Length: 62
Image (tube, rainbow, N blue to C red; front, side, top):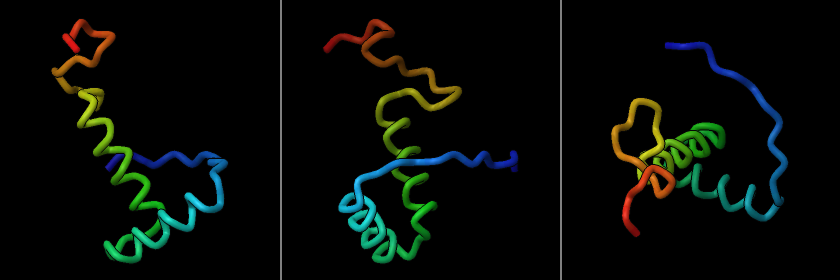
């Protein structure tokens, strides 16, 4: 597995609390939940690295 990178995330406390509750329900760490949601959003938008699907800027019709 590739090494992970760290970065600072500034986030609204209410959003952080909601994410923590969701992570607890899904039996994930907060970090794991955020990464899961980011991967899903990238996949849904067709922007995951190596993805062949193009987003709006790639000429997809809306």
